[in-house]
Length: 256
Image (cartoon, rainbow, N blue to C red; front, side, top):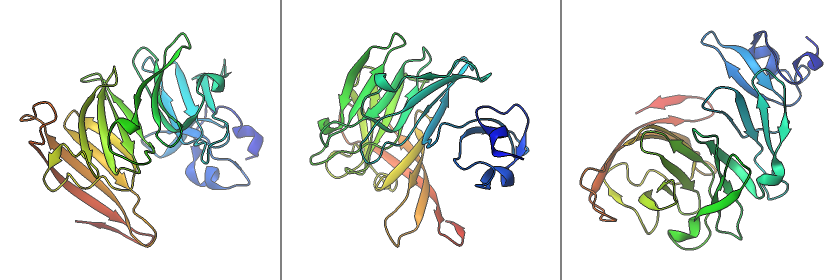
């Protein structure tokens, strides 16, 4: 299959092995895979570190990592492949990750002189800063993953330098801090598992899956962390966290 057949969108499925072949597709795209392991949708914009569909299912948003800091890139394309829009100028400083809200506002991580911002881009294109990672902890702050949770209209953002996650309401007010050096809201076995994180997923208001990519010579790990927030009052560190995890190395996966 010629590479040009996979430029833009594909309406027909393709086996994973074909798309892993650099002769078929030199730059890996954003993609959707069905339950049978077939790629049923893809769009190639070059480097992609995050792709998220709008809540109404009509558009896909995609960004590049932009590391080290250079030119941010954000693309919005209709799911039928039409109406591709380059909206990069509205996402200055964007790097690593963003999340889509139900009204198609976008919350994203942006460079800001060593202490990253969390910014909100409204559907009309207006951009505002709702939080600066320097609010919590000390020293450099680098965000690398961010998610929105519709259940309580909240945002959780990671800070790699501070080894913690911060939960915010939509207005940018801190709800809690998980892990970290100076501001941990939690105790318990899962409270110190956020170091070196490079990704998370919100399963429920009190349940996260965290990816910790470790450091050189140390295996990467994936944790499922359950938070007990029932006894929290303000910033009182009264909650607990428990975890289960998987350790991943180059040669094996070990479940503990």
